Length: 439
Image (cartoon, rainbow, N blue to C red; front, side):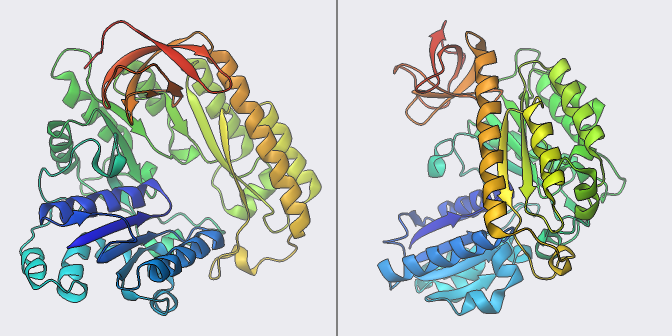
């Protein structure tokens, strides 16, 4: 059987799709394009209306170009609006997030026409809730060099604009022992970078018995590598952390440990305290500014990204000016700018006094311009600096610990550690390789 997996949205979805691809490989299915696949899995996001729209457009395109394909739709959109999704052309099954670990079995039993495939999938044994089923992973699978390791899912934060707690459920963490076991499997397969992710990663361990914390997990991962006594051949990259969860202990751990990338993603959402209260975010701008200022002092070369929302109900020109003014003078290095997207069922959906669409568009344009200035400022500060990085693709692209994508001369393979010195910032970021490969 030939299959394709198309993924929308966050790193948690990417991790879910990665596990599914392993399962397909384990039973001998052949990865191909959506246009020629027997079964296409579309793993959806529903954080914004545009995410829903993108999934619908993709499903319709697949049905048009490959009318014989059986389409299985999973993820947050399928969890939130299963009946709506089921009406789309060629959709054979919708699968909610809780059933994702068993998606291959569902495909085999109810979707695939191949009887032998169905028999094989019925015998697949699944791991500790992460969907893994054996050492079938390797760098380069589906174009990936880094391995995305989901250690947590679910969220109970009451952010007024967010539908994700409804689609992902309550927080659930993978025990540290299970994470370490999965890590050993990933290392044995040859991966050299692992991205740690979760729906609310900072809440890791609070639901376990006995309770633990993200810091304890990170310390356990560091200790696992420190047993070898040499410079670690594996780098951990921490994905998005809510500001209130990025504790001084975590910042110091990243600063002091070579196995953690100097890279933070800390969603601000807004710099007006009035807007933060309306969004039900549990911090104020003073707290956020103090956090990122400390990171910049402790880890001068750190990349610090953020998400911001404009056009939230009640956002005035004064509120927006607070946001723009803070961002312009902040130590942030890149921004993801989102116009407010109404999600029916959320508290924000019932709020009035929404800015006009043209105003929101203008504000978004200004924030993106600020984001470009912040990124240029960061790149200028990195001119001539030396970094350890991992080669991607055909070996001519290197991603550094602080998340710079650097073009380098040919001569390396994918998934090699190298030292690269930045030599030019425009028209693209380029560098020279220093010394031998650090494999």
